[in-house]
Every structure is written in structure tokens, then in C-alpha cells.
Image (cartoon, rainbow, N blue to C red; front, side, top):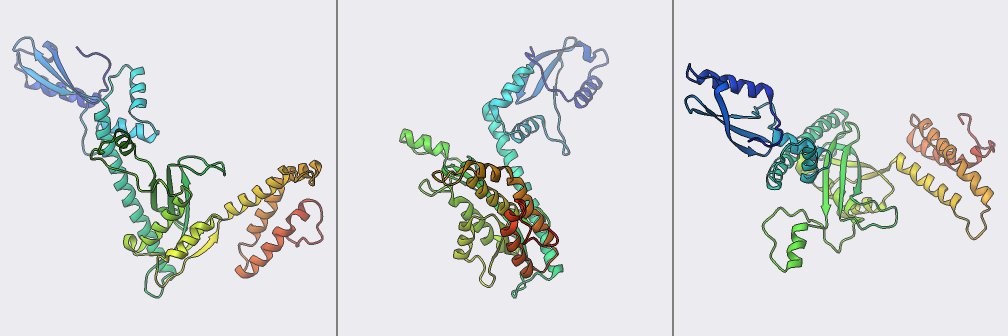
Length: 361
């Protein structure tokens, strides 16, 4: 009757058996009952039992959830989504365990529920993070002329497909804004250039059925501009969402993001100042040195010199990193000028010329 294994919540299952046994006539017991049918709802089963003595029918579920626990279907779908899988992956895992899997439609139903719950939780978490950062800004006195708290944030974006610095044609991109002091997410945005249901309907020459369409970026619009658009949207919505303004942005060397913010002017009386991210500065610095070490420039750069530069790449980076750390407690204007001198002197220091090195070097 019950083909394959079942996922059973032992405690609730035993409790149901005891309850059934207590309500049977005195001359009958649970041992006299046999399974007559099963109704599966995903990974949860309702098993109907019938007594051989008095023909009484009773039902019990393999899993019973409460307010503190998720039901077995939600748990299975949530776990599959957390690992980046879908219905096919769940079906494959359960088939190896000899457990009947839920149908695709049932999986989609629970998938939508879990996705909505995750979205609601994420929004609530971001609101709490913004409120925390808002109070900290007021305590520090970081408030503009309009009385709106000013926050320093870190922002960056990425794509669903790696570009390898040449091929920027990803169909999806995401960007996030994170509070600098709290290290908590304040905003997340996604841009998609593709919708499967819309494309299928278009190929068949039909009207797309009613669905939640995630396409919010034009096919002709470039994938590279997704990051700038998303971060600008996050800045523009900060007052409406949290009642705060982002006045300082720590980001990579992508000038298009900052240009978009300057063009849109998200705040009337507050300008946004961009601060170069140290990690991206070092990455760009190393990329340029690596290019020098790998480019022959039509034979003008001897291979021996290029090899020596490549071998000392880590030391060149280390010299700049230490110089940055040394300037952290120095006056900002003075530290910028000193750091510029140290970066330019880095190659001399690494290759043995210490005539221009400072004492701390």
C-alpha cells in the first residue's frame, strides 16, 4: 500500500497513535487496524486506518507542524532553495532515498511562499539596520541642515555571468548598499533583461499568461549600466524608505556609478562624496603592474625585466598596503599627500633604492 519510504515526525506520529488507541472501543486496539489508503500532499501523507473488529476508520498524518516549526514541505523547499537547487535537484535527492517527491506544481506553490517570506524578512531586517544606523548618526551629530541623518555607505554590484573584463552581456545584475559602521545591508536591487514566460509566448505568437514578470531592464540597455542604475535607485529611495540620506559613498573605481549619482542628484540640499575603496585601489594597482609584466610592447620591454617585476608583484602591493595603514591616524589632507609620495616611491623601495624612503619605511 505505502510504496517507498516516508518522512515521519516520530513524536507527533506516536502521539496520534496513542490518541487513536484511546478513542477505540475497549475490545479493539491499534494493533487491529490496517492501512486502507493514503493521501499524499507533497512529502506529508494522510494515512487512513480501518479496524478489523469494528470497521472504525481513523486518519493520522506523517508530519504535524505547529507555530514554532515549519511543515515538512516548506522545510524541504526552503533547504533546496538555500543550496541553489530546484525541483529537479530535490527529486533526485529523494529518489536516492526512495522517498516519493512532491509534484512540480506543489514545489512551485511552496517556492513562492518561501520566496515571499524571505523577501518580507529581508525588508524587515534592512529596516532594523537602517533604524540602528539612523540613531548612531544622530548621536554622532551627522545631520544635515534639514535635520535628516547622514549615513556613510558601501556599495557595489555584480552580474549573474562573469565578464572576464571583456564580455559584458549578462542578463541579470544585482547591487547592494551596506552601512559602513554597522556592516548591515540597507538596500538590495535586481535588474533582469529576460523573462522565460514572456519569451516563450513571443516565440509562439501568443499573449503571455498572467504571471509575475521579473523583467525590469530593457533588452537594448547595456548590462554594465545595471550597477549604476540600481545604486542610484537605492540612494533616491533612502528618504522614503528610512528617512535618511547617504552623503558618503565608498565604492570601486567605476566612474559611471558616481557620475549617475551626480546627474540624478537624489537629494536637494545634500551632495554625495565618493571615497575610493582601498581594496579596489589595490586590485587596480596590481592589475596595471601585471599588465606591464605580461606585455612585451613589441620587444621594447625585455623579458628579464618583466619577470623581475612579476616576481615582485606581492612586495609592491605590500609596500602600498603598509603605507595606507601607517596613514590611518594622520591628518587627512596631510596623509593624502604623503600616501601619494609613498605609492610613487614604492617601486624604488622594492627594488633597493631607499634614498627617498621615509623613516617608517
